Amino acid sequence: MTIRLADAPFPDHSSETGFSQNRLERRSEKRNASSTRNALKDDRAHLYLLSEGRVLLKHDEEIFDPLFSPGEVYDLDVDFDESVLLGFEADETPVLAAWTGIDKEHLPHHIKAIDLRSVYTQGLVPPDKLGAIAQGAALVSWNRSHRFCARCGTASEITDGGYKRICPNCQTMHFPRTDPVVIMLALTPDGSSCLLGRGAHFQEGMYSCLAGFVEPGETIENAVRRETEEEAGIRIGKVAYYASQPWPFPHTLMIGCHAVAETTDIRLDEELEDCRWFSRADVRLMLEQEHPDGLWTPPYGAIATHLIRAWAEEGE
Amino acid sequence: MTIRLADAPFPDHSSETGFSQNRLERRSEKRNASSTRNALKDDRAHLYLLSEGRVLLKHDEEIFDPLFSPGEVYDLDVDFDESVLLGFEADETPVLAAWTGIDKEHLPHHIKAIDLRSVYTQGLVPPDKLGAIAQGAALVSWNRSHRFCARCGTASEITDGGYKRICPNCQTMHFPRTDPVVIMLALTPDGSSCLLGRGAHFQEGMYSCLAGFVEPGETIENAVRRETEEEAGIRIGKVAYYASQPWPFPHTLMIGCHAVAETTDIRLDEELEDCRWFSRADVRLMLEQEHPDGLWTPPYGAIATHLIRAWAEEGE
Image (cartoon, rainbow over all chains, first blue to last red; front, side, top):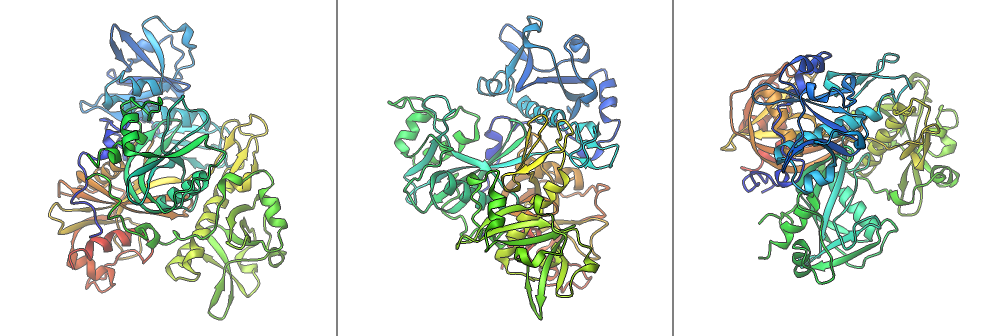
């Protein structure tokens, strides 16, 4: 029995992660040179506004609204020429995203620039808008950091709703990049303990799954093996895919796996400040932020927490 | 039961695909500005030589050898300054890859430039070298097409064994790109038929899985759903990951899934020339190249064939 469809979860585990839900219809095959212009002409068009690692939210008491009409952004220094078309609501409303250059100290009092992490950890916007925000953040970030042709150095031109840039000199077409990263929870062969580590830049007490970029010419499973070996000196055997998550820092696809460790002696790489085996009892306390040593796991929504929770709750 | 480790295949299905096996130790954490230079100074160093979509093979009767010593490539117009360090053999031999500008008509008679597809479909080199060739092809291709800083347009400089380029003007660091693509075999809810399509550029009679790039801000499962809906008008429910494959055309990560179709009426997108439901009996004949209408599936090694075969053989 090699196909796992019969017992595949539905909704899938990916849909439980932050930034994964998105109700926009992308219509990727219909994009063309006039997509963005036509969308902006539509009276119903709305935009997400992004700046470095932040999204703008209108707020009124406890309600936060991330969608702006073009009229509302008149004095917010919005770069319409480089705006991107995310897709369409069910009622055909076009939804776009654009960069705003405005300093957050100069924003009108009813608009806040909130960092993307807080938006998802604090649940400031509905989950189905987080996916559109991740899509917009990734796409706007890519366009801003890829204004020049990487092949010849000429300034390139945005087209196809921001999903393509063309070089007017050498005609090379450039497409948005999405960087695959593996993130994995390694377990002892008896399944009783899991491997968590922390980087020096982590918040105090937080431990998470190991992770790293999939390299050129590498399968997902082999990336899991290489990264775990390089970072912790642990050899991995079996690998099982669990879920994926769009991660807009700046344009990553997190690929979450569980894995079986074939060794247990940790050899710490300098990339990590610490790495340890944790028992299921410890991890359950960490998930609830009730660990006696003040240890904890990443916030709800992070794919790491879903990988950890799926294992911790399995024995219940 | 949400974790699939207990019954995860080992070796994993990814290892059955072409370009997936690679015995080099990458030592990604040890790369630095002198990695390539030091490797080239090592007497034991060997190189793969790549040109547009091709790899050079020395051949002697029926034996093909893709590894060259630096002394063997003296007059082959090799770009050593932009060579990349793939990793190390178990005996510490450094293995590199480099671009050759030599016209294939001017190659010595014992060297052939063979296209990457033929190398893997015809099994011209051992499987464990195909992964290194894919790694080299992806990395050399990326470096060649990214000679300029995408942020400011200045010529960038290669470093860290070809795994990084730095802009001397704005100091932006650029890393190799790996483009995640979903490739999926959709099945009718009763599991009796699968959805295969063909593009106009396919060889006559060949049908394969649908596929498409994962977009910014999208999970793997939602990319499977969107692409199947856009290309064939079929709505997808459950999705199950099966295997992944490095695909050096030019630097792609194929993510293979099975999926349950919730509708069966095909609405063909212009991207496809044809798309149909095939029975298990039909597909078994196609896999063996014995279909009465001359229909067939992609060659062994392609992840599409592994997705198709896993389903076709399930009922046996």
